[in-house]
Length: 163
Image (tube, rainbow, N blue to C red; front, side, top):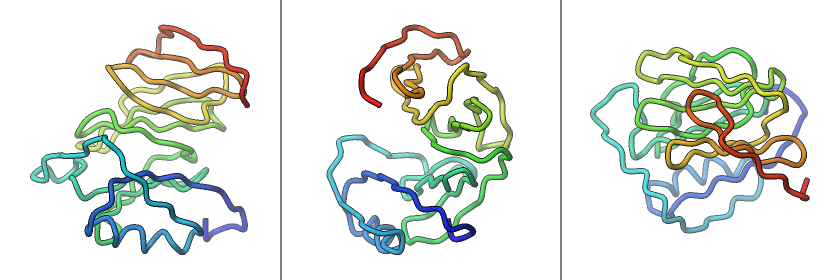
């Protein structure tokens, strides 16, 4: 975001702890930071060098790069994935899915070998992404939430009235 004069709103919800406090202080330069509790567990094996550890946060620069940041606010790694990322969700220890709105795609990225393993083409722009029970929930422009399997097949489509 420092590279251009665009501004955006980023919502990150984490369970508050002393380790996370350091990360939150780093994000204060972006604007307002709100701390809320969550029941989602991020316990991960710290022994794997490429995977996500318990003290790692994935940060996506809007229309830009994907970064791994440690709990002390230091850059762990910049993931070299071309295309201008928009949002991200974690699938498992070594896999994340990233949306690219200019390409209308979701790229499945293996963090262990740092490669894109699959590209899911969409017919609409995907603004947000979540993963649960082996399915992706993709928030599509402007009125649809699409449930997609790991192969990119639509399981169901939910029409919504909110934009």
